[in-house]
Image 1 (cartoon, rainbow, N blue to C red):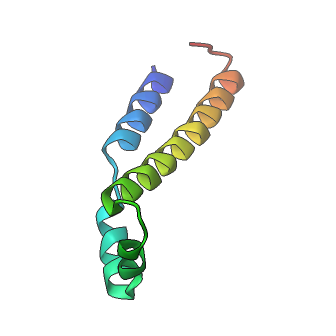
Image 2: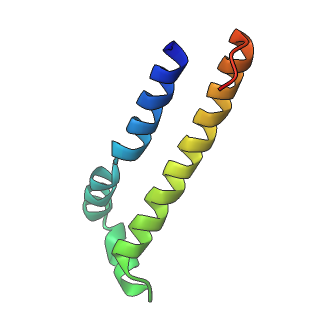
Length: 77
């Protein structure tokens, strides 16, 4: 039961958590957004791909941790 609760909370955090707004604000303040505007890629697409990669890494680490927890408790899904 606790493992299912951890699993659901992890996936909810992965899906709902986004720090892209903070990153965009930092890029505007640093002046690095002007370098991005000169490149031939769309900034929203760049930010989407970067955020998706970050979420996939978080998801991968979370799956590894939940797998280790389930093996440690002897409970397999």
